[in-house]
Image 1 (cartoon, rainbow, N blue to C red):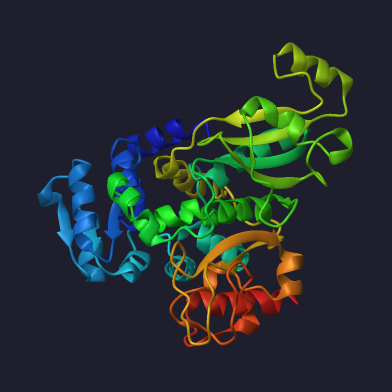
Image 2: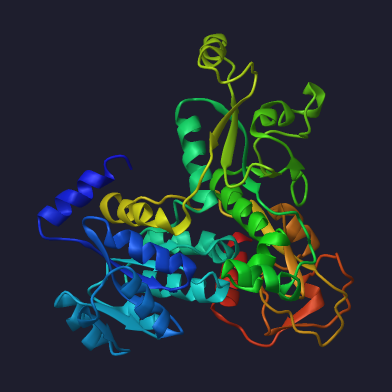
Length: 430
């Protein structure tokens, strides 16, 4: 990763560039386009958004001249324009995955079913796929990863998202032979399981964000999803359903994340967690069975032991995604993928009393929030993976507020891409 600047500079010097196709020109996508415009050896050559003016504005904000931009839903015209050095904006996501002059796809939609379809189409069209869509990954990431591997392609999460940054800390510590006790992230707002777009609307307007997005942060869903990504990538699991979610400072964490018999809060090691009070950072708690290593860590002012914290006080979201794009392109390597398949799941919990006939809306909505559990518990309880919810899922049995929503409680009136992929994944797992 440290040499990526030189690899990109060399590619540009040779007259080449990594041609990126982006789906989703919201806040994350817009930032990524501008970041890449300032880089060597890479360009977002095509962008799709259901509101194409979002893509146009993103390029304008990045300094791309109007005469260098073509709006079209025609694949041939788009490919020709890119070959002539122009950039393309479309309202059709499928156009991006079908372009010959695109090397790597980035999904920045945040919508599970759309992300699953983009990933599927990218792999079918033999293109690497970088997911800014943890919600899709925790639902069907294992099968998409297997498909990409079989095709000699990269399916990956992204650096900059907390899971990718945590994975970086994990791999650093693991490669050095440290024992990794816990992996986690900070949460920067109080947990309110029943937050919804109505309760967050004013805050969202102030921030220029979507009320549903803010609700998915406040109700804990986003945190649960992100730590499920980490679990499936590392084999670590939540110590308890939903994780402990303590409030603490960075300095306090090494002592807290010890086994209960050692004075800590853990029932086991190798767990995923979140902490109130240390956002926007991510962390790894590490230890060693070597006396000299402990001596050196103390000498280096890493604490008194036996546990130590590796802490990264920032994550730059989509601004770091270009490094995952480059890693896939140059090295055919992923930033974070579900190496362990599905060891944890984010499952749906009722936000309110649900009655037969009610439709489940989407993540950050009024009907359900997410909770991380082990995959073993998900199967035992037949709990519904959160990434499958949507208006096409209808309740057939009453579910009380705060209860797990199970497969037995709902019916699917439509079998979309993510449902079909999940069904395939579940069959293969048996």
